[in-house]
Image (cartoon, rainbow, N blue to C red; front, side, top):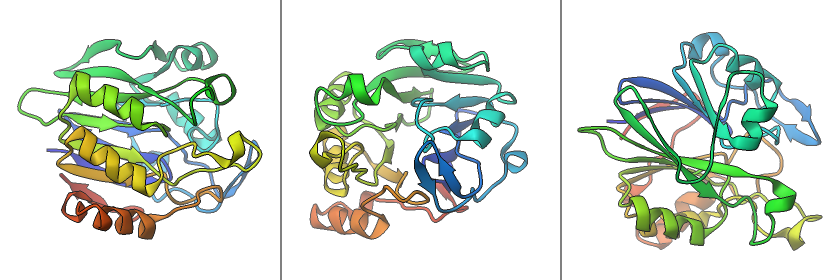
Length: 246
């Protein structure tokens, strides 16, 4: 059983395998952060979220995945998992992982998986990003995509670790006109639907589609795409502050 509370943007509190996991903490109030504009604050404060056993931080170098409020929370988390480059930059005792690295936390196996934050060849510009697959006895596999835009990456994950029971997909179809001719930097709604099929996912929970101005697609577009692919029954969408079970 997975329980997920959408805090806002890419930030979700996940209860899985007896532990409390937090994805990409963005806990600051609305404002401009490193050139990105945040329009809504978190649905829950840090005090309401704690204790956190593990932070799953896809990357540390973009404010819409780790803002100042999120950085402050890292100091109180039991464990922070992120990229190797991110771990070297952070002062929170973070553990750096490369794609396909594995570790055990309690009774949960954590596998770091690749993510591509843009089109092929964008890595040197957008920087390293990872996702995570969690597995525990008597629990379904849980995939947290991080800021991945690539279906080729999803195919690799499905081939090595699939099928996935619950997929938390970072969507929003982020586009920045000045970069890569406007190519997607995160999954579009249509790519999220295709990723669902590739992963064999029983349930998909979308995050990272609201709260910042650079998202180009929201929940309505996600629902429309899943309907078009005949996958509406697999989509489980949370409103900010809402807790879902999958």
